[in-house]
Length: 239
Image (cartoon, rainbow, N blue to C red; front, side):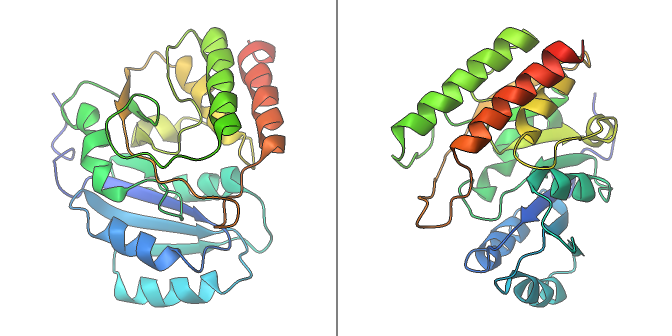
């Protein structure tokens, strides 16, 4: 049975790493704040230079659950998450990108296996079907599936979407993990470390509203090579 703090309302910390998302951050924060599960919104600005930080200050003034942190220099998504996770007090933690490729209205869906006492960690999956999916880059999907296959072979998990942005953790789980990667290598690193912790891991199908590069998408082919490096590093070399 879950402890009393894991109730359907106000049990979730949302950690939002942000870099140059002035055009979308307002809508993201509003969508996150509208969810009943949310207790705290922890936003880490990774040295944005497009007006994001100024926009965030206005948003935080209007939303009492929001707390802002800022890096003096750009350090990457993993570094921003490391900063954010250290500030979490709510019993559950989810990562929310600042571009609305993932829909905050699905928090209840991805948190449900933990809230019902079945899971310790839940990964969303863009490849299991269910909600709407924007049709975009074929080779990105091939790369994601290849990296997931390699990660599964190394971890002995049967995930369908290792690189997914929506990952939910019990607070005590994420607090035990030392994140070493500063950039997008966070995804395979966290999967590798979770796989060795004897946890109950679930996967839930989610919607995906992807962006094009013209719309601000940041991850590229170099990050694919970095993910491959991290799969080797955190699964094989660390054993």
